[in-house]
Image 1 (cartoon, helix red, strand yellow):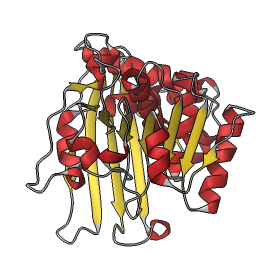
Image 2 (cartoon, rainbow, N blue to C red):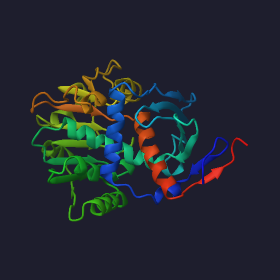
Image 3 (cartoon, rainbow, N blue to C red):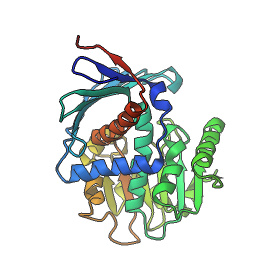
Image 4 (cartoon, rainbow, N blue to C red):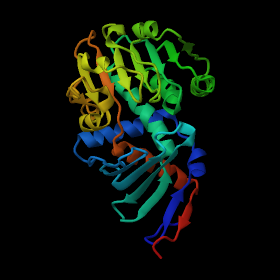
Length: 329
């Protein structure tokens, strides 16, 4: 299966599903992408967005270059049926990677598994960098795709966590969270909480991954000093952002585009104090005192998808997976 300039290797959902990759490998790959970006060796332009007037669909296109891997890639994302329930929506996301040394295509792949791993890995890096030194209790809000791997990734970057709290209402989702935790960390279990206010007051790190229709909305008054709140989906009220002592974002520009539901009464969002790539690089620290309440906004940067997608492509090629299509013949 030698690649040339007339064929493109296609990696399907099933091709990628069988690839084994450790959580530590995912975290290291994503962290490396941030370091390269902070060093000025990668390019991550702002995403392009298309949405019809009635809001029934949304499409994104993201171009980037990873300077340490010497690859260029384009990610596309299309979701249809935004007004419908999740099981009635159509969602497609792909990543196409080119080798910028040889000039040859590497692969085109389904990007759903990459996103499902990249996002909780970023949350875990945010938690590691932002949490107070003695943080020991983590609370995850939501049991969807992101909620199911949030705790295993948190334990990967913060092995000293000894209490794992979960706020969720869907039995299948709760069971899936437990199953993923047991698979990666046998012997560990969650504490299912029903009083979100009390759980938030006890947590040192909160990761909000719930869906858009969740009634959960943790308020700033519920948080004790030193708490780190990380927003991935929903579950945090705008007060946690506007009354935070420090605001950290993976990308301030993206926060201001995609975080509009967290705006104040005037439709405004506060500026970010720091972005994660700068923190990962060691140039600046997210937290300057143990008592600071930190709000962190997790939005994707395409360079992290590129790095993780390239890692998957390497593993797939080593195992002879994928189908070569004579696309340019």
